Amino acid sequence: MNVEYLAIAKLFLPEIVLTVGALLLLGIDLCLGKRDTRRALVLLGAVISLAAACVALLQWDWRPAEAQYVRQAAVTSAVQRMAPAVGRDALTHAARISERDARAVTTAYKAARHDSLVESAATPPADGAPVMGIAPYDAGLSSPSFSAWWLFTADNFALIFKAIFALALALALLLSTRFPVARYRGEFAALLMFAAVGLMVMVGSLDLVGIFLGLELASLCCYALAAWHKQDARSAEAGTKYLLLGSLASAIFIYGASLFFVEYGSTHLHVLAHGAAQSPLTLVALLMVLVSFLFKVAGAPFHLWAPDVYQGAPTAMVAFLSTAGKAAGFAVLVRVLSAHGFQAFSEKWLLLFIGVAALSILIGNLVAIHQNNVKRLLAYSGVAQAGYVLIGLVAMADPAGGTLLNEALPLTAVIFYLAAYMVMNIGAFAVVGIVGRESGGEELSAFAGLRARAPVLAFAFTLLLLSLGGIPLLSGFVGKWYLFLAGVYQGQYLLVLIGTTMSVVSMYYYLLVIKQMYILPAADGAQPIRVGALAAAGLAAITLVTVAIGIYPGPLYTLAQAAAKSLMP
Image (cartoon, rainbow, N blue to C red; front, side, top):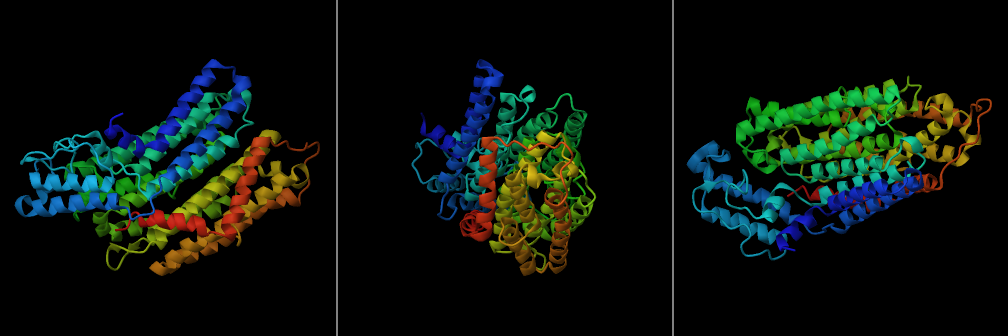
């Protein structure tokens, strides 16, 4: 195979593993009987997902992220050299770049690749060709590997989120083994895997168009999965609401991206960032992109879709969406805001994020107190958790200087908490799914007497809820500690005070569930709850990891810090 295509394959290895695995599952599902292969398909999907996570981690680079900085340096050099001649029009399709500048860019690319591409790769264009930053192929830089390198990245930041998505997918599949046979198909697992591929494309893209393509691939799969229970009115309602509101958020995003293109002739993040000017059109475009992803992470007041979708959709899909989907949204927000030129707008988006963070923490925790359905309770809990993560994003900005603080702590805290939240929230939804399957509902009363009906299940759920609430020696406490510490260093004392106060309030509704399990008696005729072997193994692993991170957070913090530093020059 040509070395060019091997370079591209290396860039997308986790996505390729999941795509081939999903197609394999569909093929097996078509050839063999549904009932006989149901659990085997799920187990195979979980193994493939774990393999994708291992592939992502094996690509980890402990060296400084030279490739990322070469892109930034290439755009900066081109803009600076052209600015005296053509001024601000340097970032339009009419701009020109000299052969010397193009050759410098391609030489830097080859150096960053740390391998020898074919000599014909990325041949510099003649004088007068359009600027490389707009589109590599327009400038004559038409080698496939160059285009892939320019539009996508496999830096540590992208890799850690790809690993998070793959692990979330594996856990969601592992914990869905006892899904009703009549409604479970290989297509269910395949759609989850394709959704994970879309999320991976999002976090690895350096262009708004690539981000949009990944977003839509993931969203279309989730729309179908939300309405998977065809005969359930709540599931149909969940799918319809998610489709309509999700499409609206996608439309807002693509409209913001189109405004960027109108203003600068490009949708590449580095080109936009280095040419960003304090113009109203740029500000509107940036705010539209940010608001669309605040919808995806269910930040208030863009959260209204979450409770209904979480309640009606299949539990395995909700577990994946509430963790991997939220992590992908925050990853894209971080990548956009970490672009150098958008730091000039920090005063604008800082106010937006402070307001959304405070509203999310307050609304999520206060409304969750009044929920009788545990799925809806966890949905509003997720809104509050999004508010806590936004504290870390707020801490990334320096309102005094209008620049990004050159510190890794805020971004490290965000990555750390999203990884820890993935584990404990999937475990919580797994318990809700098991109890709902055996009891016929997810109301609080369904958990009454769980201590006697399934003591191990009750104990695991208790630990996971306490971790979500931020009790010490559990992963949730360590994650919140880092987020609040970053907020204090940045001077957001009021926001941190709101977060800590509402964390105490959140313990009230978590303790309501624990009260049902350990104090209130089970309903008359309630039977012991059966837990499948695979689900039990997954839940045990989740509980152990939650406790292990709380006691010894060092390894995860080191990975999160390395990923954060890959975005910092």
